[in-house]
Image (cartoon, rainbow over all chains, first blue to last red; front, top):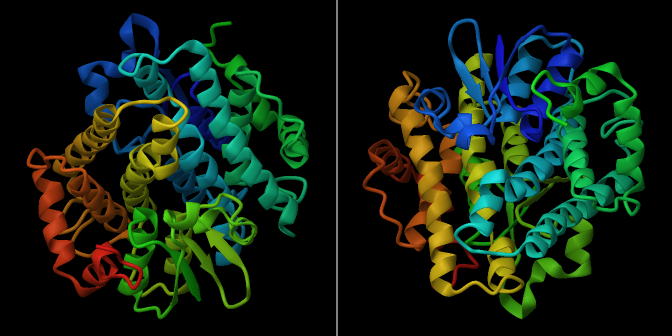
Length: 216
Length: 216
């Protein structure tokens, strides 16, 4: 299978973690979101993904899956071991809830296309953009931390003692928070889980700094 | 089980459709998002859902699930018939992809709290708010329509000839588009599926106009 990715895209980063945790080999197809006006805006890429976003997973059958959580749930069904979802329905709901808190209510509001609209069409200033960015991360992480702190499911990772879909979503969001220098010391569970995740090779190898298209 | 809902919340609307399709009885607990500064902003509600959003599904065990797609996937696992997800992994990925296109990349950017930030902190004008709203719906629906038009999975509904999670997400988003008078004639598949869905009692009963807390 082939993953259309961009080193700094945190949605692609989620999928890279999942592929690594599963030990699934994939062809790494970088799509530069910034260079030459954006490689994701070409007609060819739009035919692949009408949303013009990364990640895209292209299967060997030619079938295309977009949306990072849809991709990760697919990978987990395709190759159930090691599992990225817990065993019971109510536990899976907990993991999906945490994952969607990040994937629906933090990340999309701070995505590149939204920031471009804010600075372009709406003409907001740099400091207003930074405040916007920080606002949604802090609001989301405050809720995420509270859920972690109050749940008996919380362990070494977001759910118990093995990485799950929720960790695949959390770690890239922390990367984004750090990129914008947002202080995270109010979120001790989040920071603890980050440490546990980044100690694993699957997470380390998926980091934006370690991709073949990385520009630092 | 008890559903914390608001008649006009499209995320809650998704869950109401799913509960009705499953024929699951639930206690309807309205949370007024506008009245008295917002009932979702009380300390009690924040203890229930640290994100201070609807919907919340409270199980008879006291366990709480937030995030509409996590709730619907839970309901589908709890009571698998009638199924809201197709049988194979790759088909489920298609349904999740469509669902998340709406739930991650259209709805959250136009959510009440984001619009409040735009008109409050950023001081944008009414016409800029309307343009923002329309922009994300048209961008998202353009991609959604293109996927529907190009997929052999598309049938009477988003996936084949039975309603799925994707239809639970699409119909409330169309309601929002209509509320803001956004022309949808460019999206024939979306409009056709809307007609097929709204002809079903499960969808009809879930409409914002038919809730016990409806204010028209």
